[in-house]
Image 1 (cartoon, rainbow, N blue to C red):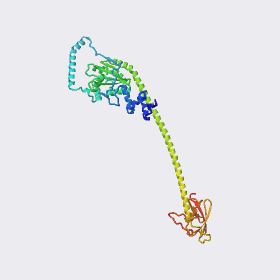
Image 2 (cartoon, helix red, strand yellow):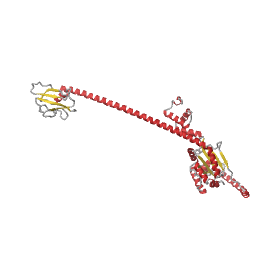
Image 3 (spheres, rainbow, N blue to C red):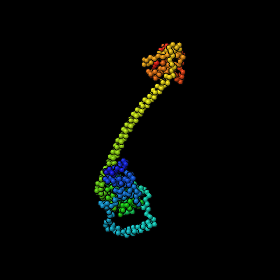
Image 4 (cartoon, rainbow, N blue to C red):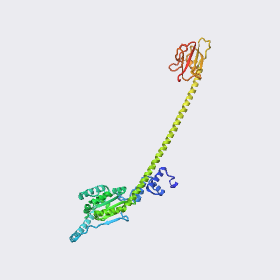
Length: 447
């Protein structure tokens, strides 16, 4: 495939182009593209239309130009079609010939008058058989009347329209035997009772083919009669798929015995069996190619899903790492902010601590503090000052923990020196009973 032939197509159009080429077997890729473009890239319609063109059927893409769209076009007269016209049984002996010659003028006169009457009647009223309103009903009605007149011993009739029988035979790659019933013909009763009622004929037809029949005096039967153009009755046609077209390969006109019918059907079926074998092989190949393409498409989609899943996991892992890193950065920034805020707070508190009184001040109280690190601090305060200044002094020291409390050694008790909403102004040194010199301990609340 040349790059220029698909270079301007999307991935979906390229996929449809390759699938269409695979299904139809058309080697010219440019022709495949033109067909798909003509059908707006609808691959189902394009494939069906291509097959219809091969069979001589109307396009499914444009409205069919047919007077009777339910009867698909067929090859009615192939070059190798077998045609058997069988004459009725001839009179034998003097009495039979005398009886035949005696009735001949009356039969001629009756048929002539009947034809003239029918012709005149059709001039006044159109033939009702030309208007088909219930084709399935015509077939079912024929089967019912046939069984009333000739019994239920007959091949299995296809209970559907002629078009449905053709489509089923084509889809199932089977032979289709068509029987047109002329109830006015003199040989019809004998043929129905002795030939179609034969056990051998019934078994043969039921095991090898579909069997469709209808009365030519009904609209559906008349329609098929006009399509097959039979000349006399009983009429048998054998139809089979050949060269992608339903083809009439055998025509039998006139009365025929059961063994003779089986023999002629068998010979024609053997001659045309290679066509069905080739059609089955071609269909199997198309089915295999389609299945293979579906499996390849599924494998590609599965691989694509796996790649997308891997990409999704990588993206999620990357996003998780970025989230964790961002949280760490935020935590570090928050700690830095708190540290800076704490340093500013210490600087502010330092300026608020009153000056240390002299040692000979009668109000002075000497406090010795031992930090958790072992460091000892010493400072003098006034008895009348609040314990909050003791808290500020310890809090502002570099070695002091951030969260702490101060206790006495004996008796052991915690001093309420930290100001808060419940205790905005802690008691004084004197109020808590501290003497001139005290040893206090700073304890870490987070230790």
